[in-house]
Amino acid sequence: MLHAKGPLLSVDVGRRETETESIDGVLESFVGGRGVGTKLAYDRLSFNADPFGAENALYFSTGPMQASTMSFTGRMNCTGISPLTDRLISSNAGGFMSRNFADAGYGAVEITGESDELLAVHVTDEGVEFEEVPELAGATVSETNEALTADRDIGTDNLAVVGPAGENRVRFASIMTSENRAFGRGGLGAVLGAKNVKAVSFDGDSAHEYDIPSSAMDIHREAATDDHIMKRQGTTSVTDLANAMDALPTKYFERQSYEDADKINGDRVEEKKYKKGTCSACAFACKLPTKDEERGVETEGPEFETVMSFGSNPMVDDIVDVMQSNELCDEYGLDTISCGDVVSAYVAAEDEWGNADLVHETVEKIAHREGIGDDLAEGVARVHDDLGVEDWTVKGMEFPAHDGRKLNGQGLSYAVANRGADHMYAVFYSYEYPLVGKDQAMDPAGLEGKPPALVEKENQMALNDSGVVCKFSRDFMTPERYEMLFGADYEDLLAVGGRIVDLERAFNNERGYDRGEDALPYEIEGLEAALDEYYEHRGWTDDGVVPEDQRPASA
Image (cartoon, rainbow, N blue to C red; front, side, top):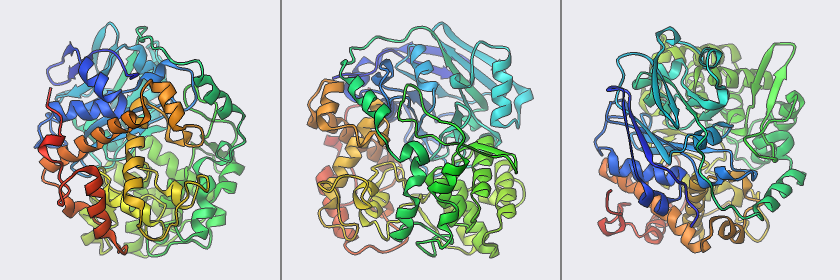
């Protein structure tokens, strides 16, 4: 089975010490990326670790497909204990850093400890440099990038940085790379900020060689020539469909469609797009560099989830206002989904629907923990009572779009996902709109027959996050192509994904979480029976706990 190569580099930023050790067995069993990050965290972290404590760690990792020039492979993973959900979480970022990470030659990099001075940590194939950067305290993402690339032979594609939100321990702070790509969900930027690390860079000339089949370029050619709407509108291409199906959260989840969706949809985003945008080596080019000359707003995006969180949910009907919210989040280092939902909750509490100025002011207050922003920085689950609004989260994570009240299988996915209400954990909504062929499409209503399909989809997505293969490759990847790329039977590959999901759940079980947290803030008929069926397919107990004999031995 194709898998990543290289040792684990452990970097203790408190002691400013490093060490390397072989993790060949982990790489062989878990491929790379999310799988390797999850196994290392399970083996090396205390189950009782404080997310903001020195004992928590971040695991950066990527997969063997970084050795290819195939489309859909310019991504990497970061794993740690989330300060938002209090659970183990992996976040995935695109852009261009993954191949610079691979050039450093490590199978994974662990960042642990806590520095007494603000640091930039420079990781290369020749060692690690700890650079004190007190002058960057409070700097935005772009200011940090500019400062760290000015005197070094690196670019923004070498850097993973946090903005003020990460330094201020906003529980949904992102780690930003390639300027505007994010390890977004779960607040791992706050973990890096708590370690007093402003940035980590990766560079070198020690990338490992892999035997990638030449037929991988068939996928690349198809990605280059396919006339897909995502090439023009990215994920916002689904806005009108979601709205028509009553699957677009609106007015802080009070409603499921937005009468002004045509003002913030894919067509409006496409009108503001001024050039192509992509990730490393990808010919699909679904990113969205946008700008508005009149107001001087320039950003990358918004994607569909941001159109919901900063558009329909607070009822803002101007796409440029949504673009500005997107850019503020990128500059301050904030997850646009969680941040937009938190701001929408505040808008609901203040009855200030559509007030874009208030939205933008509140984003800035959150990033700096100023005034009401200090409370909102804790996330919806911790602040909803004080605001007098409902808790629209699962496991403490705010909801994306693709409303589970309409797309019931996606609702089940939100309930059981180890990282909470996250649409990319299984991408089950693709079956229910549908965004797949008729042979795979499912009725969005009800849960009959969906638990086993959800198990398979979660396993496949875990494999994608380990390979690493972008989840938007779904129209191009088949079981046969997975077997071709990774040199293993498809069912064996899915089993790797299953072990990753098991390990995540087992870690969270050890932190005291079980079936009681697999819940939704709304009702779906048959949910409890579907949970039973899902657990049965996973081999878990009726309480949603992974049995001891289903957990691999620690390293």
